Length: 197
Length: 245
Image (cartoon, rainbow over all chains, first blue to last red; front, side, top):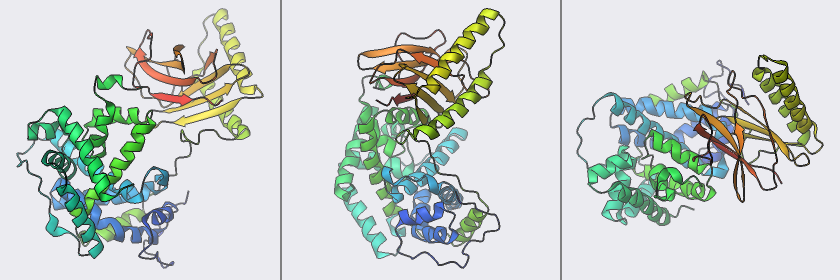
């Protein structure tokens, strides 16, 4: 394992990682303590991490704090990414989503839940300028549109608002078993629509 | 296996909720335990996780300006975790290596498990047990298996087909209330046989347990049971290891 000496400075001269380096390769370099690669990784994923965390938490200040924790977690745990278990992006976004959701639930446990309108509110307008990102977002939106209402609402309430399936069932006034099933068959339909292998 | 805690419901139906992080803490922990013993569920869950991650494309936003510097500065003063080396999949290290590690692990376990013997009889029983353990460790066909099931602990098994016996020890198992104990099982094609209760851990290490009568195709499993033991293993299993053939 590479040592990360405290005096190692980020963005030190070394050869900067290419902008288009695949994420998995960057993670491999990061795992060996490469700060320049970590900077390149940041540039590739920070927008998605921050956007997702903010969608779940709503509060931009908290979202920034949690995003920082997530990205630092990536630095710390890069060596534990196992490509045989999925893509680098999924590993990273799973980490980000879980952190955000855990933060929401910790707050819920401490404070009585504030009333929110039970309507998925996805901020499409804040999508990054990058054409590719916009195309991805467009595809996601189109595929979400191909789901039944119940599938779509179950998935968006859970993913973008961090609700548990029991909360989703209460919000949508349907049995818990139905929500479980809709989350699964909805995701399967999304998977096929998005062409995830 | 592992389906009992879901009561009637097919555990597969939770894969979607899990991939969306829509399971509460307890449900999530249970599902993960189930996943570790259900290859087809892990396969499906993987695909659904990939899918869920794609949903993040539609919320991408510009990260706050100062964040990059903060993150990179924090990384510069943060030590990285080493890779995980002992996973279930690649759990059979080379013999020589393995035995050296195993002997080390077991020596530590024996040291911690050392009991204050009150009678000569107990002492001679303990000596007999140590001899049996040594016989397995020194058997020419001894092989070692290590499973890192963190955070549920680590298990080390040294097994000899010739002796039809194995030595089992565990470390860092979560503490149990006094009404419960860990029980060891041999799970074969025709059912499960209890291999006894695990001794209480000392300093996080469990003293080695010798298990004889191991048959081809057996798996070793660990469950949480009432302190007096159970007739059948209670799901979900804490750790389950296939033995080498």
